[in-house]
Amino acid sequence: MVDEAGSSPSLGAFLKEDWPYIAILILALIGVAFASLALEQMALYWELLIPFFAAVCIYARMRDQQHKVALTKLLRIEALHWGAVLGAMRLLSVQDVADIMNANASALMMMVLLALGTFTAGAQIGAWRISLVGALLGAAVPFLALLQRASLLVTLVSVALLVVAGFYISHHRKATSTAA
Image 1 (cartoon, rainbow, N blue to C red):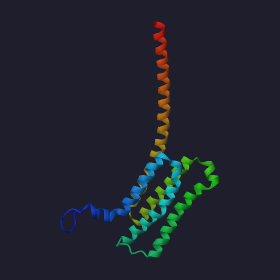
Image 2 (cartoon, rainbow, N blue to C red):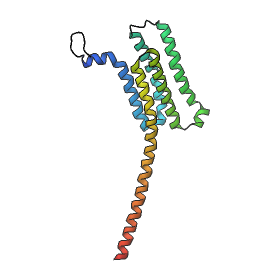
Image 3 (cartoon, helix red, strand yellow):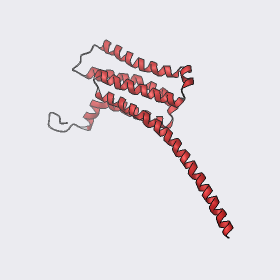
Image 4 (cartoon, one colour):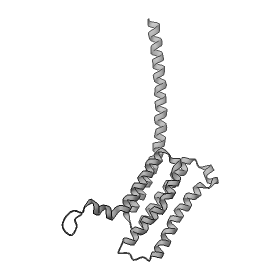
């Protein structure tokens, strides 16, 4: 991209223009990284991101000069949208629901809800960057589930290999002692 003077835009101009999208992307990536370590504790983090994501959506829509939406209407739409996402997340915390789902499944569902809410918010206001963050969050859900299963699989395979190595060493020692 080239500006009016014919030079490439600076990093500062890029950051000034796209900082809200970069911020929600970084916050989402931090959440995904921590979710891979402690998925059960991430519910509060995802819930705390909702107001910030809503503010970025409002900011993105208000700075778009092509759409002159009344501020009160925009605030109402975003409040309803993100309130519904937060309400759905809170429903997962209701004791009867929490008793049925384990903590990992509940945390993954909250991440799915945030991904869906982010994607649809971006689509609703025409902000492809916000939709992209939602799509990345959604794509991370099966990755995290696979990572948890993979860590269990790696642990089981490691234990099995240690047991087999123990059997081999034991057999080798027995064979060496009977040969001597």
